[in-house]
Image (cartoon, rainbow, N blue to C red; front, side, top):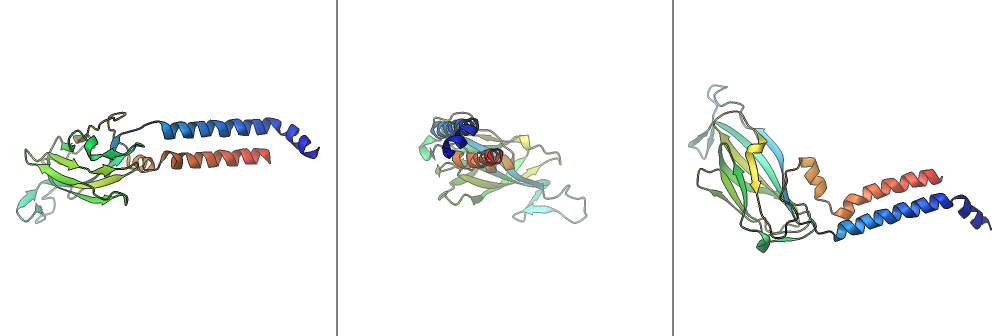
Length: 212
């Protein structure tokens, strides 16, 4: 009888909790089942080595001892599988192309990767005007990423991140690749369930406070 009375007094709240939990479970199941196949990118860091060569007498930046760089920059670019499907070698319609519309790419190298990435792939600076880098990834699981550091040189100190572009086509992609802010793409490295868990926990705490 006591239990029946408690149920009757809290029937509205219990119904609400059941409805909310059911809705969240539906969203999670839908998110897990919905195919998302895409490769996105972000500029994780971007810094000028010298604001202007010659601003301080006697200081200059050279590459391998003989190539003087005018306005060099170090840019770190992350390529990341932000979908929930594996991207295999055969899925790529050619290499991932990193293109610089103004200036030249002096050097490029993979400097970091997610632990689960066993082979980040080969890099190749295309000799024609030295404005593109071809990246040949091998296998990228959900959330996998690699970070590439680029040494860039320009004729002027003016720089816009939009001059660095990424071109990629993968079989079955659900949308073209996009550029995200560094904090956004770090969040995207989490699985859908991991991303939803904090929201579900927060809601559960709110409902618990209301019940008390």
